[in-house]
Image (tube, rainbow, N blue to C red; front, top):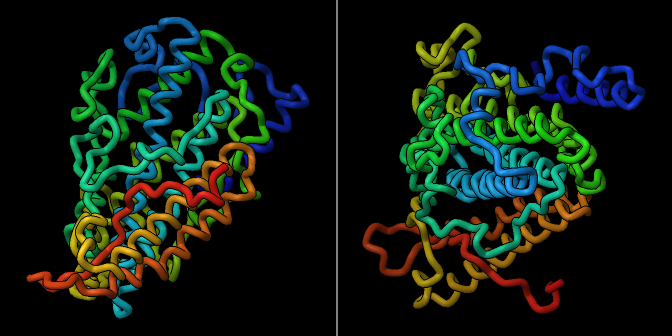
Length: 408
């Protein structure tokens, strides 16, 4: 089912719940929405979230809530960590590149912003404070993902097979392993992103089961970002106010990234020019294969639909993982890269304000992210002085403190 349709059902459910038309046991909850409780079955496993909650244990409400909020902040860092690599690949496409490459990279970057927003909504719903404005929020590329999840090192590559293969590695679906999922403290490098999100879901379900929705969801509704402030063809932000909406947020993030357990389709939309919508991993796979998935394709068959050509040479050759220090002997490049960093961090600070109760700023912030294109292209169209490989510069995505006038 399309996310937009699920959000409409969620709104109807909340209205009925407010009128006490639904009983507290969620008996009348539509089956297309996530079913709360610990007796729900973990996707692809014949085991329940109750078993997972028992395996993870409890140290009381305060400690359990703090642990869950810490995981959610790491999820916020994780969702953002993929955006600079995807933007770098997107904005190094040459003008004659295939529209499929452009659309895949653009759509995935936009959906990562949606995921970032949904995680922030869950944090705010629990009475926490999402942080996007601290220096530690930005990875130092090349960088491992938060908690060293999957053992992946993420680089800032220009558009290339290497960049798309990296996208596949980040979004790759994998079987849920009980030995990892049920471990008290699994090693991050042995945990996939999907397993990380399932552990978060298990902790949230357990917290509500033990202490009730009223205590767990203590955040003020004014801090929620809704459809009024974020909407794209891939889906929409929605308010998280209870266990059902929180589970829908977490499952949306997992399904759009690596896909759902029984299909590679996310069911959200038909993309630009009818390019069908599949989860992120499968979109990157289409580029590598030069073929679209068709409706009867599966994970095992791979894409068997229409062929299309990806010209891997239609890209601006940039140096991976540039640093400001690389431009110390090129003042104009240094100035341009520093200006980019300042604007990017202004974007992150604007997002912080949006999550702090000024949700109308989110659309402005997302617009700012894509207006970075001019600064981006100023850098990537400039050759590096004396570079033996004749590569170009690229943004460094390094921390930039706010200008004194902008400091709050």
